[in-house]
Image 1 (spheres, rainbow, N blue to C red):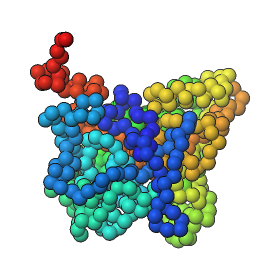
Image 2 (cartoon, rainbow, N blue to C red; image 1 turned 90 degrees about the horizontal axis):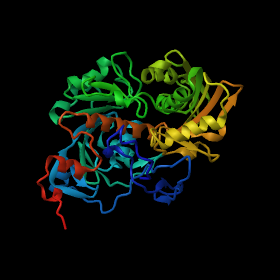
Image 3 (cartoon, rainbow, N blue to C red; image 1 turned 60 degrees about the vertical axis):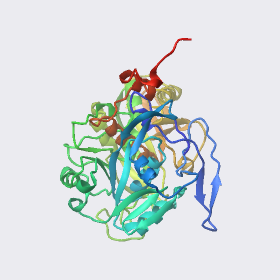
Image 4 (cartoon, one colour; image 1 turned 120 degrees about the vertical axis):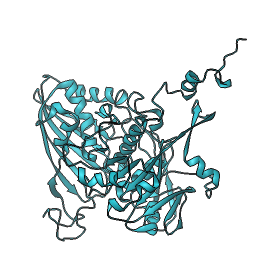
Length: 455
């Protein structure tokens, strides 16, 4: 998977860094075989592959299964430290739709993840789960070896993943399977009572992949307020929305550098599964209209939700969404009044570049090339500033435009947040020097790998 700059070590443990470099593969329009397209990296957008290429895929052996349950502690990231292994947290995905499948692909592309996805809840069963994971109209053909093992199991590169089908979270086998974290991806169980059913069923933590309903569920956006997370705060947390994940990082930069007085946001957003393909009944009369034929104005809580992660901006931002006939990639248009006077577009872009190369590396990027939406498909970052569209009007009004892959980029942040949860888990290794051997030797100085002999 194409690399995007890794997240700052002070925010997220080294094991959460983004996938290694590879190429895209998208389905041919003529036949089912895939054509590999080379993607060149350039300043501004470092596109990531949505597809993982795997060599020598094999059926699971006993040792494969055991290895899948353990993360080797490594010296220099390559050689396992003798006898040292760390048990992974068991993860369930509830709802194997767009975000659920994107999450699994993103997780599959991470090296040494502290997570182990062992089960998905998909109402379509193993046939749909395996087929839609393997073949994706947006992501291309998944280069992992995906197979149906039996009526209740699929395998990904030999790793078995159980498939259950039950719409009632209370009936899910989380206790039986020892589930630590549930990735709640249905968009249905987004409040305390709903998501809490997973806890009642035996899971220990729930990450909601949508805005949460209710003040009792804390919201975290990687790059903005994930440092506030603690294991004891809540058993249910939210990763906010894709649009909030795009908006909040660069709003944070603007507020810190220039001081935001007030502003409005419009997200030109690709259609999603909650709209109608053809005109049909919907409680939102605009979303009832054919998604592929119309620009559909609708509501979004993304701007207001920024105050959940940046409390100082409460009441200062609002916005709307325009759903458009594209299947993926969206763009935020933010206009704000700022306290600092006399700034230029170059000043604003310079602040973004500084953040993108520093504390928001891997979360924020700046693009200097005149691109269009499809070019940002499979971008790993939460938001990419389109520098040529930054404007300053008068001495205190600023306009900023930022692109985001509302599926893939968002799912990368869900993986990051799950890794953060794992890093705070009691009994899991805490963040250290980012040198596993050095950390190992602090507590095992007599080990042969830790001895230093003078010449």
